[in-house]
Image (cartoon, rainbow, N blue to C red; front, side, top):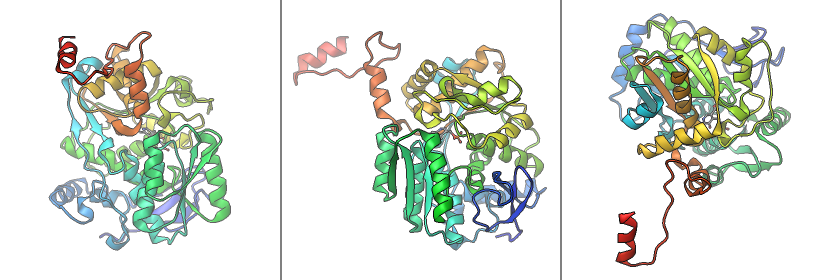
Length: 426
Ligand code: F0G
């Protein structure tokens, strides 16, 4: 593997730290750190390398993250890498979803196919590899569910003790189940996600524990691979739009960095536009976009999409850069629109969690407002799996006042053929 040196650089003051420094933020000003890799201009050679690795069935080349390691963490040695493997998620086309959104060439990049059910595994394999090679005594995160499940699984694989902070009573049962089952010490904090993250940051700093939230720059390096992989699946011919749900803004920042690097290295010749979609009850970034990001906002978040129920997003500045550099947009969609989009994605036989459906609701809204035109090729990212939040699904389909358009409530019957026949007749 290449041995070129990458560094960690503060996004605010530019202060440089060694790649192996375990500081969670800039030691000079407290700003968030970013990884600076030695610049590359060998896009064509990289494309060939990546393609050759696709044939691998074992080892790190079989990972949809580490296959792109020159752009992720070039100095990682194979023995240090903690990989499930992860990634290798499909790009799906479904007429029902295209029809509903009004965009003919809509593709869905389904990150729910990752090992613990969300895109978080792509960042976690890199952050846990870094924790492993810097000999972390323990790792921690705050989470709305997906990050905790992912951290717990990768910590178990690495043999590193894990501590998880989740908002009490606000995390989907399946995610809590995974986190506990994989063996993480799970703390139910009386407060929302923003309170959990503040506590996780303070506790990690005080106790010498490595924080693996998306403020950790190595997480973002892994999440960039969503973009590399979908571009490769499209033959490195970028779509016009890349649409994703946005909460803490780590993924928005990661997508921006991936596109910047893919363009600079010559992997792609043109930048897609990013569209970040928030839930209207948790939309500080969308509100700020309207004013040209004149101010940084926080809100008291409320939405059915628990994964993006975040009022004080951490990766704000780097997400602003991502939107600006890609001529991107940020909008919000209502919980009703999210649940409708989710019902459409679910009924197409794919399924996703509520927060993920925000991206499809966003495509429809941007098409309706004319921002996306009919001929645009659009990739919407489904960030998490259908089974994340069964309670929301059951509630939606059993709603009676009034029943939603696509309601499919289960029917209880006596164990008799006539009863089945009655149901079949409708
Ligand atoms: N979609 C899903 C399924 C998520 O779990 C998250 C974040 C997002 C979208 C938003 O991504 O924060 O990078 O803007 N979930 C975090 C968690 C907060 O704890 O699992 P973001």
